[in-house]
Image 1 (cartoon, rainbow, N blue to C red):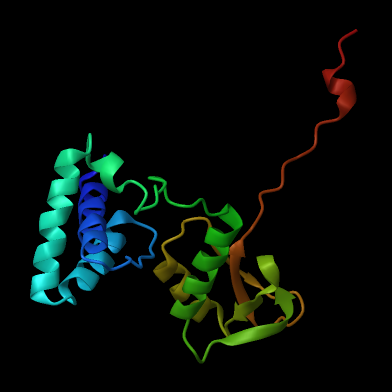
Image 2 (cartoon, rainbow, N blue to C red):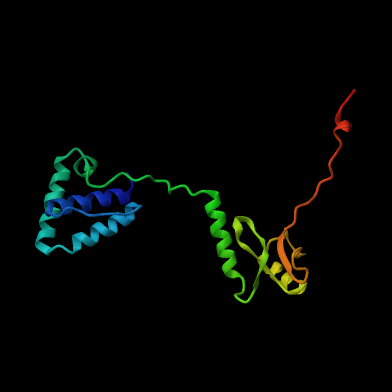
Length: 171
């Protein structure tokens, strides 16, 4: 049992013995502890003292803290909830887009992955300066196919020469 779960159980049993039903929400035991402690501290000093005294007695009489107060605090998963890679990529892209200058234009024709509009720059030099700031060695500057006076940043695919199938067949 983790220290924060143990503390959450103690606080919950103190509240229960003080006559208060604990109301707690959260994804971690630390969040539970903060909420339970706030609830306990909001009680009158005499009620708080009585709850602690009776709670300690219940813990001593029970075969353990988990048996005495296990029903008061839910068992939480120790692993954080899984996030899909597409969500992470989308968040990264949105964060990167906020780093672009507000005055940077968007191309009315070209789109990136996810349907986002591509940014475009009026000269190769400006686009190249932005590319260097991005810190991605695979990023390239290329001319827009729809509007040749503008330039985009992107990852250009490397084309591989296809090998005829007949060269691999052994007789």
